[in-house]
Length: 302
Image (cartoon, rainbow, N blue to C red; front, side):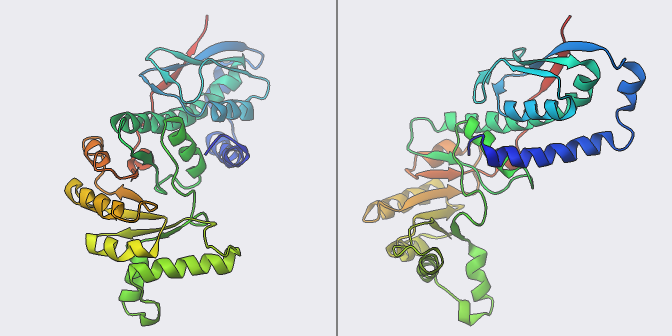
């Protein structure tokens, strides 16, 4: 996920909503009461704590949406590590516009920088292993592309953007058939083959390789059964490192083209041991659903 047209389009819609919910029909009562309309000012966006920056283009768009004549001058780049007290951008223009845009600018910059910062901690923790850190679909509704962009700024990798982008056969897809619909009761291997056939029919790809087919398994027995069906990725759900090592050995015995993804029970205390097992991917929902916003503020320049 890079900063491109799709991400910008998402943020444009969100900015419109954000401005409307802040200003309502009356506008900024405090600024209208205290700040002359002709007043101008300069300020800096400052990091209050160390972290990794993400969302500078979004912050610039937020400022422009509120105050089109205001100037935005970024002083760092997305993906850059910054220190506490470091200036991230300077802004200049109508003082009222800067004040009205302040919270929106800080909210998006803090949120996305928080995601980039926690992602970088995970990436640094597994450095030297073959494992990559991936995000999930556990994102804020409407913010998914933005949040996945922030993960990339932190050095992580993106899982599928949405349900449309890849096949991921989860336990509940199989449980649906096991719950009583015998016509659609599949073993993991059968589900992989059925999904591949569906892609061949729908996508017009005779090899069925136009999209990724991934399947979740809970046990080594399921892994052994599904590997011959040649999924692109097998998600190993909630397996401890000792079992993950066995899973990697099983895959390496004849199915090296299949990537293994560890998921569940992943945190900064456990991720290094998980990565050391030899899995290719580690998906971490906490990158987006539990990230703490980076503390950023606005300081007026004299």
